[in-house]
Length: 341
Image 1: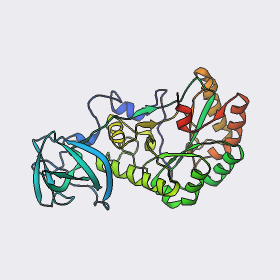
Image 2 (image 1 turned 90 degrees about the horizontal axis):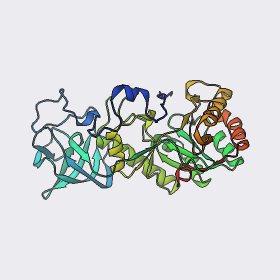
Image 3 (image 1 turned 120 degrees about the vertical axis):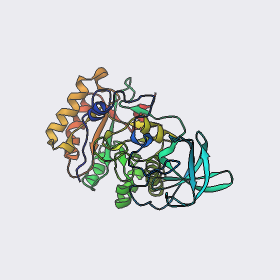
């Protein structure tokens, strides 16, 4: 499966996103979940009918949300559907403990009753994530990052190369990829590579690059929690607090929602190899090394975006890139190490 990838500006935001909104980090959330949906039937208080069937409940922890509806109250329902009985009506601005997700719904407890609320009208609470496009520029170090979200591709070849060159890298892992390729994930953990969260299904949280609808806060939470649990089960290590958005799509609402879930680092990149777009291995090498040569501080702290999948020649470009970077005095580290002060 070939994933779309927006071309990045030097600030790390996608051009498609910049065309769609005036300011990426606007104070007022611009993502769809908190706009009144004109397609919703006249339900009072307003709730959205889920576009897809609810998934199995996913337990979450240490998560809170504040009710925020166009009206004055939000329904607490007996199950995750607008067809379920209303147990209570929750006043706007109420902060609730959130204990599970099911589709677009959060499970919560309010005034002695346990039930479900539509997450479209819940603003997750916490410190928004900070986007990172480059690490520490005072050190001659670079981070290789590999997104693993489609097929197994060149995973074995990449891991063999990294092991033979004694390089520790970082992998942006979807939960679906981890579930399909557990042996490779275990190997990544055993060989000292870092794994960060890349969602479960590789769905765009905003829909900017795919044209799909934005995901609700509950579905975003579901994608993060399930992936983290899978990686922990396979490696013993959490993916927190590092996250990379599929397609590079994010806005202030995404930064808020991932931050509330404990992902305070939104890992973007300094240069995209564009291997996913059909470049040859030689062209990839020239692109990555040339970008670093032209950068301030000679590319110190660069975060390089590669892909594991078979649609990319990134794996075959690694020997050329690594040879040239080492000749320029670079060492290699995981994202946490490269961004450290």
